[in-house]
Image (cartoon, rainbow, N blue to C red; front, side):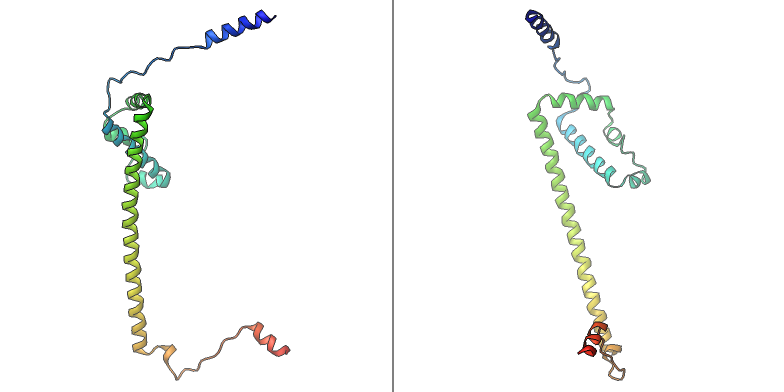
Length: 165
């Protein structure tokens, strides 16, 4: 019985071993700078699709085919080139790091523009509020009119507490 298990184990080991063919350079090879641009655009369009797909469709942008149309490639070419670039893990990691750094740089620029616009709006809003306050003081609004009687407002709990004591 022991020999049977050994023979079965050897057969399983021999049949389970397979030769993995090396990925060949595709016929329609995409150079690394162009591939980085494709990856960058893919990330941006996927993020935009996750954020507001209705707006993309409204402007007539098809997220599924945008990258293929922009770079004039088909999905098979894209898949073959991705498979080729992933065989060299270090080069593929470096390429993805460049793309990620580019996205971070763009995000920093967009954030600084948004912060500047927000500060500008806040300063304009503050200046306008000061102008309105000054106009009210000059015109003598209700709050500054001594002829209108004022009433001190107290809450009901304070009145009830005073009555009980």
